[in-house]
Structure formats: structure tokens, C-alpha cells
Image 1 (tube, rainbow, N blue to C red):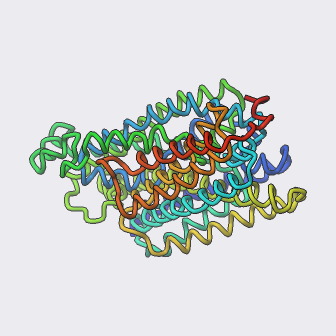
Image 2 (cartoon, rainbow, N blue to C red):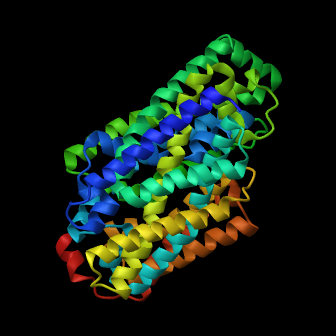
Image 3 (tube, rainbow, N blue to C red):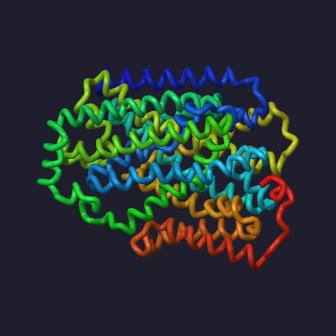
Length: 482
């Protein structure tokens, strides 16, 4: 156990925990509890919004799994990972802004709120909520596992002890602090991530004798490590292009990203957030994946890819600084899982319970129910994460693809095609959801592309055909507000 590194890491986590609790008290007397707890009262400024989107965009797969795959595949995985940044934020600029404007007119708190108002169908609400709950449990489990493994590798504690520490810390400050606590602590976490990745990359380059010797070592070991095609030539143009859809264009359909776009104070704050966020995410993604590749000559033969980042950090930095720098990937994991916890909690409380079970619920009961559901979800995901898979990145990417397959056309066509209706949305949700799960299980990566491409094509066809075959009168509220 590295006592110094562990101490500095836990101090950083402790500070985040305290900030979360303080914010929970400060946000006690805001507008409506639902809007405050799940959207921070829609009052996020540009910098806070940028950093919370950055921290949410980064995750266990970006800071633990991604660099681990880059360690195995080489610079090809760096190229694949970095190209998502411009695509993702360009998509948010075009689609995310329009979605956020319409969502504000609907007074929507969640993505499902938007779908409910747009399509006027309880089946759209139920199917959307079901999809979110199913896929995001996998995503949350990946984050719990990433946090547990990181603390385990630094402290020497058992995986189960490390996981328990991580779960208790995150669950408490999300349960009591809500969205405002999450976003303000995300600002701190995003800053830690940016500074930490720069320090670590520079230290690795110095330790390796410079970029040229590192590249020479990689080439001598396997020339494919410095090509766009991966160590085994598996990163084909078709796969890389389809991956841009998965982690770039498709992010507009991810509920955890969309809810950020709904929470900004004004248009100026949104534009500032996009610029700052694009630059910060670009630097972080490039640095973290380069770190994974450059670590290979310094620490060859690492068997568990998910341990690359903590091992190389402890190798090239003084122990006290390693603990602080490793707060960066831990911050990414914490900020992603807290966002997912709130998202699933809001789906259960706002989209199902308040909309269809008890619309006249008192503020006090809503507050109690929201906190209770969030805490229970944390416990359930902890139980799922007790027996972790070998590589968490694939679990996370599976979740992203599933959500995009289900939601991208009900959201995009719901904004831009007035003839799209509830039948189209229901068909797209069902066919996108089922086709993605079946293809992943029995015929993954058809035509050499990621499964998500085929699934979203099937979902689009289902949306258009069902809307044309079973037309309905468009919701008057949509005609008025768009």
C-alpha cells in the first residue's frame, strides 16, 4: 500500500464530498424541488456547464478502459478516440441547442418529459423509461467497477473494500446534493482532470527519454502500434468511421448528455460552454490515450489493461503527486456515475411516479422519494459491480450504443419532422432496442462496422414507416411551440 498516494487521493475525495454536502444545504430554498434537484434550477453558467459536460463525457472507459485499450492497440486507438470530440460537440451545437430550446418551452425536466409532450403517449414514456433503466444500470456498473479498481490499485485494499468506499462517497453526496452538487463538484473534477492529464503525459515523456525514443521502442516491438490500424490490424476504416457515430454524432441521443444541455442559464452560457468544453475534452482525450500508448515501453507486459493508468502514474511521479493526479480519473468516474444515478432516479420519480401514479405529490414527499430512490439505486448497482468483468470499456460502449439505437430518431425526428408521431416513436424505440441487443449477441459488427450503425438504420426505417402507415393528428402544443 502506497500510504502517501492513498492519503492525497482520499483528501481530494473528502473535499469533493464536503462540497457536495454544503451545496445540498445551499440549494434548499430554490424554485421547484424537482427542477432544482435534477436540473440545478436551469441556472448553470458557461464555465460550470462546460466542466460538467466535460466531466460527464469522460468516464471510467475514457480514463481507465480507454488508455488500457490504447496500451494494447497503439496510436490507432488514439486516433479513433480523439476524433469523437469535434463530432460530438458539433452535434450538440446543431441538435442539442434546438432540443434544449424546445425542452424549455415544454418545461421538460428530463428527456422523457420532452418525448411525453412531443408524442402525447404513455407508451412512449414507458418504453423510454424502460430503455434508460436497463441500459444505464450497465453504465453505472462500469463506473462503480472503474472506481473500485482505481482505489484498489492505489491503496492495496481488496477490490470489495475499495468498491464500498467509492460507492458510499458518491451515493451520499449525490443523494443529498442533487444536480447542483453534482455540477459544482464537476467543475472542480473537470479542472483536476485537465491539469492531471497534462502533468502525467509530460512526466511519461520525460521518463521515456522523449517522444522519439518512445516511438522507436514502439516500432521495434510492433510496427502496427504506430499506424492507424491497431496492433493486429483490426481498426479498419469501416470500424473507425462507425465508431465516430457511436461516440460522436450519436451523443445527442444520450440522456445524460442531453440533460446538461437543458440546464444552462442562457444562450451565451451555452455557447461559452461548447467552446470551453470542446477544448478541454480534446486535451483530456488526447492526453489520456497517448499516456496509454506511451506507457507501453516504460511498463511492458501489463496483464490487466484497466490498471495501466494507476501503475504508470505511481511509476513516473512522486507518491504525493501521484495521489493528486490520480484524482483525475477518479473524478471522471465519480462525475459520470453521479450523473447516471440522478438520471435513472429522475426517470423513476419524475417520468413514471409523478406523471402516472401520483401527480399531486407534495414537495416533501417528492424530496424524500427522490433521495430514497437515488440511494437505493446506488446499493443495487453496488451489488451488480461486486463481480466485475475483465474490461469495463466494452460494457460502457455497449450502453452508449443501446441508448443511441433507442433514442436518436424519436429525439431528432421529433424535433425536425412534424409528421413524425407516437407510432413512429414507439416503433423506433422497440426496433432500435431489440435489434441492438440481438445483433450484439448473435451478429456483432455487421459489415465490419459497429453494431450501432445497423441498429439506428433499422430504427429510422421503423420510425418513418410507422409514422406514414399510422398517421395521427399532431399535438397542438407541438405546433404552437416549435
